[in-house]
Amino acid sequence: MQLIAAICAAISAGCLALFLGRFLLTIDLSEKRENAPKRMPIIVRLLLPAITVTRPFAASSSLTVWRDMVAPRLWMAGLGEVFTPVDFIALRIAFLLVAFFLLILGLFAGYFWGFALLALLFALFPAMWLSSEIKRRHLSIMKALPNVLDLLTLSVESGRDLLSALRDILARRKLDPLGEELMRTFQEIQFGRKRADSLRALSQRVRQNDLTAAMNSIIQAEELGVSIAQILRIQSDMQRNKRFTLAEKLANEASVKIIMPIIICILPAVMLILIGPFALRVVTMFQ
Image (cartoon, rainbow, N blue to C red; front, side, top):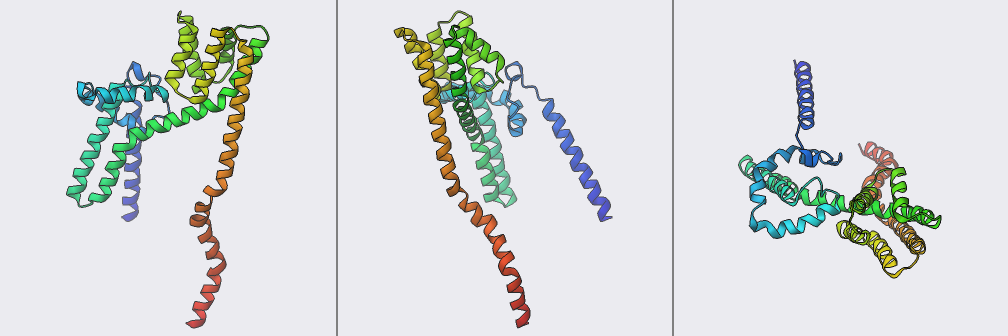
């Protein structure tokens, strides 16, 4: 009977997981979120329908400052076309409501501190997720920027103009955060926006220091009549040296960061293997 009960419980859990997975696939993200990143956490997808309930409060005038603070961070994370500031604040309010419900549940269940910790994680999760996306995106742009600048330098030095070189490079590169931003800038220029204004908008939207320095150099080269190829070559060398310096720094820090995992995980096992047999013999001898 215990075996049958365990099998039935496993089947029930599997059916519940399958139902939950199918439910997540049917969640309507609307046209604004049809290009939502595949890495969007499941918990965010679960709470997306709750945005319709909390949106009126998120759109109130009392949260104007909060919306102004969130808007540039959404573009920095590459989520500017996925969430509006109102929608993201509505999502955060939904997380806060869930956290409050967990606090009440923990208070009545008698496990207040455990539920309080879980509620704190729920309350902080949207901000942590947004910050991690910004950090991941900036790191990806920093890694890809020197190679793109090298390709642009070679194309411009061969006699091509900057826009046609950028178009061909984007057509042959795998789409990444830097490619997405450059493609958006290229489309803005095609629609008639001035090149300098589009490059400034790119810098203001991404706010990554290396990309901002490269775009400012290109804008100054156009305004002063300096050779763009020479500026691109200087910028590519600078960005590559900076990337190598960061790699060396991370490599030097690895030996320090690995000390704690060694002490916590590896050292106890080694001590158990070395001292364990001797300890067993001593115990047996005294017995």
